[in-house]
Image 1 (cartoon, rainbow, N blue to C red):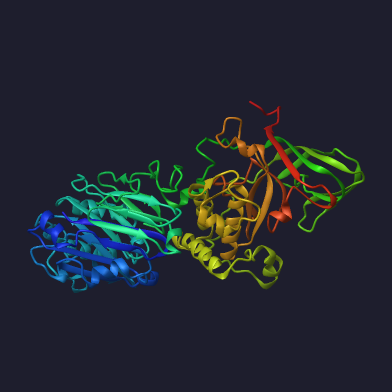
Image 2: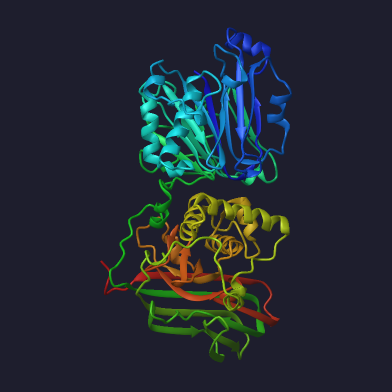
Length: 600
């Protein structure tokens, strides 16, 4: 049986493909009785029009195979490769993959297996000239039959056929013999595993790593070495497991759908990457896109209280200096927000040294305290204690009750003027913003331009694919640094999501506060530090919290303190030393607990 390989990237990439078996010596020792046929298809520039190159009788490396290896300009998000495709008739028209125009786009199809002859009578084309085959292979016949069926149900894309119905169609074909299938319309990649697993297929997902990526098998090698390509996420399907990846076997009769670097549908439920998948966490991958709305923090079960919960917060900050500070000014934002969704039951702010204090509301609506010490000091202790009642919002209230909102969001001129501070991305080199924009648009494409699904997917993906590593970044770390390194802390993940949302024309602001994780939760360390998340403005609900560090929506576990365009606007404590001080040592201790009246 022939071999299949399909790659789906989150944004356009140009992998180097080396056909390892294209040497006369290897062919003589492996399959001397058969020519080495191969074909390769992709969508240049991520266009609806596909391109396929084939060599049914390859006698070793030639100009076409060198194009796959050396040409760095055939950028696409979808690639399909078929190897050892020789048949009794060694002609280009019988060599896979096949390409056909249908529904305003070109579809590419590859098949590994052999069907019994009666399949032509049971799956007829009815002499329909629009779907007539060019060659004589069973593979092309199945491809034309599939397109004819899509036409009969009024579908113009794979997704419009319906994934469950598409699997049933492949099962019908599978009844006539062993077969694996890969088909794409340039938007989705569909892989089907033979019901008897005569030729096992696997899938793998790889997120960016440092340095070049190189995956190999005896038949084919795939390398990502371009400056942009190493930042790509890829999902692969293959009958040839390549080294360097943690492959997951497909189940018998399983159909998987990949879109923009992620599995978006499985006939056998949500898929989970094996431990060790390159740079990916072992959190559950989405089975279908709507499941992003069910994204939860970590792997623990979180109980949503019916009428909210009451939390007690203690935030203690200690500054120490090796020389006395004789002149300074400090700005504190430690008072919890008080509104319909969060009620501050009690709040006390203590400062260890005397000075002038003034309470006011800053330009972002945050409760702020300005403090100027009246005596020199070598130690400054600031302690805030709060009791807060959280009343929502409920996680499911982010969808518009009237319509399906899509990207781009349209803002009236006066709305844009008011939201302008929250629509401007951070100042970065243009090349970096362009790459971040491509990354953001991959979520839009994956979710068919649905606004809410895109935002939920983005929130869940940052949680799943980016590692939480304390001390790995600083306040100077940029969103592009986080994007390339794939690691950081809550502040970094918030900054990255803010930048991506603004590039998608969605107003985004930085929210500082605290999070209750529960005494036994694996991320309880987050309750022992200030937390940061994102608030996005949705026209039908207003500002809504998204927490990419935990892959959830902000609700009954998030205590809001301050907000702004970025961290500096919402920092809990900041200040300026005018005289003295020297070396500074900072210690922060935060504790978030369930109020004793509700504990247990």
